Length: 255
Image 1 (cartoon, rainbow, N blue to C red):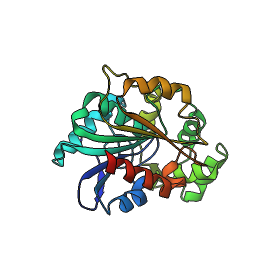
Image 2: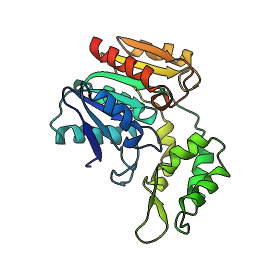
Image 3: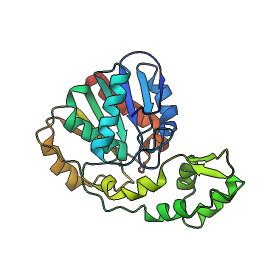
Image 4: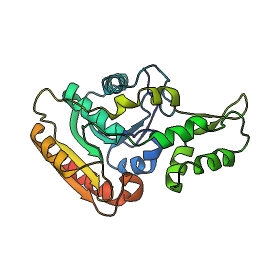
């Protein structure tokens, strides 16, 4: 599979992977700043953004897609940042393809089983009158009847694009994502102790990285680290970009 991507800067490669319902543009501003010292690649994972719509969404499949992307770009070692679902993809890469990874930063996620909590979002997106609407505001108003947080609505609206045949369409393969949602919630299993330098970053206002789960996880890594970003929720790169930038650059310099 040929994943859609953008790249910025020169130097050692850094790969950034977005979360569920996201796309590479979510990290564009951060990537441009980081590209002052690195060649930064932001990618659309399968069935997201402008990457191909293909059957299946598992972490093994998504990791394989990333390796195919790396090899197509003649990249055989890189630093990685993965947020949320993209963080789990990164952890799958660490497990299966550790030789490709110089160091890994996992943003606000752990390789554990999650209970979910996106059904309201799925209901809103799947029922949205994308084909029959002629104004973006109609879709936005529809989402607002399901979702209270304006920031979440704005995030989801980035997936909306004009359909040449009339109305709108979602850039992501919503049907396939919904079909395989249980696999997105599934844990990542490790077969041996991980020796890739790995940093976990959590927001203090987020509940995605429970302390007890991290303590158990830390036994599976030789050199794990955990840094908390004060007053940040799940989208640390959007809420506290400067703090995250400082964390990322310091970790990469040391690892």
